[in-house]
Each structure stands twice: as structure tokens, then as C-alpha cells.
Length: 335
Ligand code: ATP
Ligand code: MG
Image 1 (cartoon, rainbow, N blue to C red):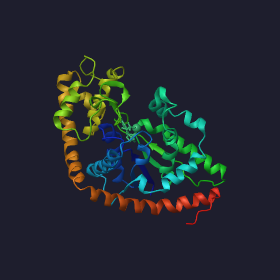
Image 2: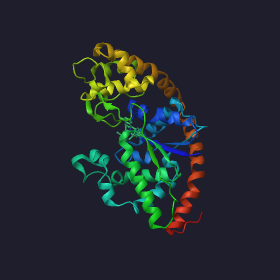
Image 3: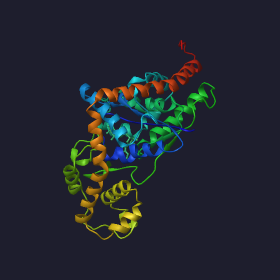
Image 4: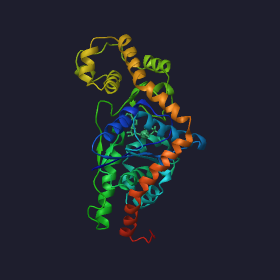
């Protein structure tokens, strides 16, 4: 059975973008014929400053978000990255395989570093090489992600190819595919339709958090930026309207409908009708999840136990692959 790997950083509270672009699809893949491995990627989170106490909280909260959304720790392997040291070990090897020129092409680094590229951590720059290690440590071939991670998954393929070629280890690391599907592969910021919604975005008003209450969700959609035109009668009418298209995409993804079906239902209607319907739908889908997240967060020790169990299962797969990698490279490492 093909192996799926994906992760989410505990760099803040989970957003609707994380839910629709990632977690909801992780749950779908768990129900199909895959071996699914899902990780709270805490080592990635510290590439930018994280308050230590908040990091622990966020790590458990992302785990709770996974479980509350339907990731079953007995069906999927669910763990946090820091508890499986093999990730960092393989990450170092890949730092020595990946080229500086490859990293310089990563658009996410450019976005995150902004004008301040001299002042960001070296870890932020090397991040995609650790991400390649996350995936290849399990010989995973299927990587469900949002649109923004496509380039990093492609880089993972480049690292795998170069490793296999340099060490004449044909097919040792398999080629992986990004799985980017559905109407919400890039959920946009509610205040600026040209930027993606992110956990670490500046303003809380630009995102829906999975734990927002009904009033907050209604308020954020009500204040979401749009143009004044009503919804178009056909999909073509959304092409030059990024904010309108974003809200239609969100509706479609939440309702498991196509964009066409959303337009068939709401075409010609104004925002005064669509936004409250969207808010109601989001509350209907998110409220049970956030209630369950809160319940799980009441017992952090239980979350830690589940993560520990998951990390034991992850290590069983990872350790032999890492051991073989060290051997291929010529590093002595008593197994
Ligand atoms: P940060 O701002 O700290 O980078 P983030 O919200 O981008 O946080 P990540 O942990 O970087 O979240 O990404 C986790 C997963 O969620 C990835 O698969 C990513 O592609 C997906 N994802 C993140 N934001 C969106 C979005 N706006 N729309 C769709 N998918 C998203
Ligand atoms: Mg991100």
C-alpha cells in the first residue's frame, strides 16, 4: 500500500486554510487504501521564534485538531517530529545533498524572509531540506498539501534524485507526488485576496481559526473584503474577482459541493445573503470539531501518550531507512 506523509506546524492556532487544504484531506486519505502518517512538525515551527510554553500548547492543540477532525491514532500514525530524532538526522544529510541555488529559488522563503533575509534563521532557509527528510524517512510517495507547498514537494524529488545518483543507490529514495486537490487548495486571506490565509498572519481578522466561536466566525465573514457586485450567474464571472472566488471556494469545500453547484444556488445573490449562509455553514462544520478539541485539551497527558505511541510506530519505519541511508553515505552508525 502506498504511504502518505504530511505535517502541520504548531506555529499558532489552526486555520480554516489548514483544515480545508490539509486536515480534511488527510482524513479522506485515511479512509482509503493508504498507510497514513501525520506529523505535528514542531522542528519546523522553531524556524521562526516560538515562545516555549506556547509551542508546547500549540503542539498538543494541533494534535487535538487532527484527532477532533477525524484522524484516528489507531488507523494513522500520529506523532510530533521532535520525538523522532531520525527526522533531524536525515535532515542533516539532505543539507549536504541539497544545493544553495535550489534553496534560493524557494518562493516561500522569499515571502517569509521578506526584506530581512540577512536576519532570519538559518533553519528557515534550510526548512525545505528538513521537509524532504520528513517525507523520505518513510519512503512516502503521496504528500497531501495545500498549493503553497507544491514547490517544496518538488524539491524533495530533486533531493531524492540527487542522493540516488550521487551514491549510486538507484531507487533508494522513491519519487513522491504532491496531492493538491479540491476547491480549497489555496484559501485566501479574508482581508486581502492576493495573500493566503496563514496561522502566522498578522491580524486575526484575516483568518478563521478552527477554535473561533460562532459570533467571531460570523463577524469575520461579515467584514471579509469583497467587491460590491452580487455573485455572478456563472463561474466565468469569478475569474477577475479573487475575494469573491475565495468565499465561493470556501463554501464549496465546506459543503463538499463543486463551485458550479454553489454558483447555481447563489448566483445573482448579494453578499448580505451569501456571507451569513457561509458563516452558518462554517459554524455547522467547525463547532463540533472545536468542541472536541477543547475536550481533548482538558487532558494534555492523554494527548502526550497518544503522540508517544505514534512516535514509537514512526520510529519502527524510520530507523531501518535511516540506518541504511547512513550506510550508503559511508557513515559509521551502530544500529
Ligand atoms: P505558517 O503561517 O506558520 O506557515 P500555515 O497556516 O501556512 O502556517 P503550515 O503549517 O505552514 O500552515 O501548513 C500546513 C498545511 O496546511 C500545508 O499542507 C499547507 O499547504 C496547508 N495550508 C496552509 N495554509 C493554507 C491555505 N491558506 N489554504 C490551503 N492550504 C493551506
Ligand atoms: Mg505555511
